[in-house]
Image (cartoon, rainbow, N blue to C red; front, side, top):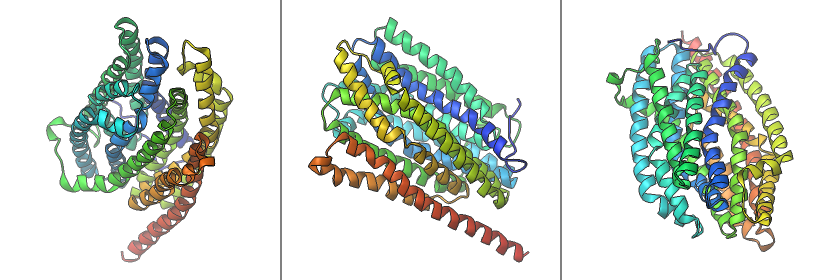
Length: 465
């Protein structure tokens, strides 16, 4: 089997970065199509329409809160694999791979138990409205039955991308995405299911993607080859993965926690049309986010390999190229989506009462104005984080992000938002771009310190030889 590897440590960077990133963008878009297909199918073809859209959409921040802590470990897998490849250490690569896959399975089992048993309780704590709670609980419980496959896919895809192969994960998500859409339509149209049908379709399609990525690792011919008989937890290797991955997971988890607080604040308006409009807008934003976040993954792996190869002079170029690309892409997509916002939101939202549709779309456009147009700032923030983590520094960027994004947003909700004249949905949304700007400034300083420290360490080691 051809490995589709890309050499990240030699040759011009711009073309390689673009070619490497495009499949990641397409892969991320396909992953989002899972949830978007859920929203569109239940919104337009189920018997409960807008209510189903609100139920599925209201679970997003909670699902991310529970899942992202474990998904963060796959960041550690990717960074350590990339660094080992750059340093030319095949034994380390093998230990990383044969530790990561069983670790993903164990994490998945834990999450399944938490998600199935705790969904109703967590949604109640979030203040989910009574008419949405039973539907949202049912969706989450079925969704978490397939979460082990989701984690295995993400860990396996991180290994492939660290080795320079971004095309294989794209192919596997394409196959799984087609299956997901087909099953959505079959379960909702023919079996008259609602949120349970789309959740089941997602779980089945995610399982297929996990099987395909494991098969790809088994068929590889290099050090990244997976031998199922050699899978076991290597303690020191797991510690190194966790050293990078746990802070990344905590950061993602705390991002999601702040979003849960924000979602609870939105829920406090007790307006189902607001929830439907926000859910549709958030789904559209997701497509922009994964497109930008692809440059985070690119910066992480390119930096990881070059850091492992001690080619520090290339890291600044990697950062600059990724920053320019993510800014142009993020601003262009944000402006385009807002310009055609009414048409895009109408894909998700339907209701027998035309006035309800118009009001829900209006709420969606408000979120787009405050969050989607300046969304490129979030992309810049993620690229800085990717480069810093690619150099093996995990804890400081986590702390910066927690303070700049999470603490700031939660503090905003409990201070500014509580002031009567600012107790509006617009006040909630404006906290997003402010938090991104604050975090970018701090990350720039951390990047300069980290790169200087790495170069100084290299010179010191060279002088002792």
